[in-house]
Image (cartoon, rainbow, N blue to C red; front, side):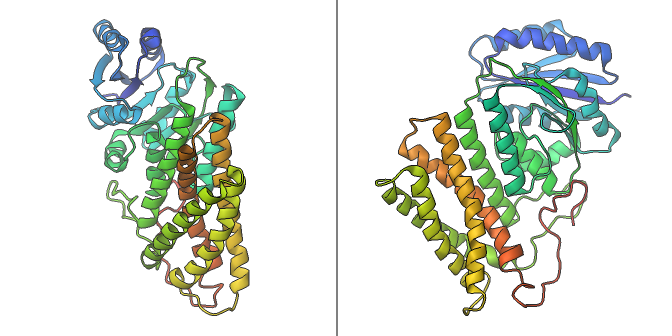
Length: 404
């Protein structure tokens, strides 16, 4: 029997476009798609008649069904549909059908053949054609660059609403995905990549929906919080999932001992930096207050981690290590300053509490990068003249096809 592909369409108050989009998708798949398919409309507690429109489509079209959730959240809707699916491949696309449907067969074909585990449409890779405003283009590119720089992501576009997975893989990953909203996609992809799964990318033609009602500021802050949470799980080894009998990755040698000390020092450094930021904010702007408070606390943070996390004592190489710690500081400064600059560009009247929340979130993401720089560069055993520890498998190899 031909494989079955289930396409979820999460919707919230989309009555005005739902019928047109679903009928267009249904017609396209009936005419061109070589496999069996099912379209599932997942209504996220809509209040505008979307649910009634979904029921009408279910009654009128043979391959359409509707489900309703009483809570909002795109991730929650996809989790509900995918975890209960009996299809061979599960997918989803945004209801506005911004992505050209000709990319759908190339998206799912590697999953049906077994070549890949997940597949994503990408607007940021060679061969894609995108029409959208400069503001959203800039935000999207910055977000994906941040993922690559801080969490070693190898995929190019985390946010495109055009993704698919082998159902057996989705079921293995979903229990470990914590987000229920817009960060769901990113967390799923990071989890897959860190567990050695293969992610296939398809360049897409994509036209921005001018009627999009996504709260850009709220979504950006939630994404930064999600990145900080994922970074903590990566560092503690909690971002691991047994998939199809593949070996469970382990923490690198020494990391289990180093993490608690680094975390404690990080907590005290964060508190000290926030106190300094609030005090300095009374006499200078937010960007300068952030920079000065970071300079002061970074010096103390590097010295404390040198002694307590990595066990380095004495004055030998101390000055050089402080300079190298400054590189980690500059990256943290770029992340937190960029976060504040983006916040004020999107919400010029943001309150002091929102400023502090954005700062904490950005610094949380920078923490992962700082720890890894210290571990693999500044205080690496070979640079300290020590024998290297025996190699062990890493949590995230950055490879799509293996876990070491």
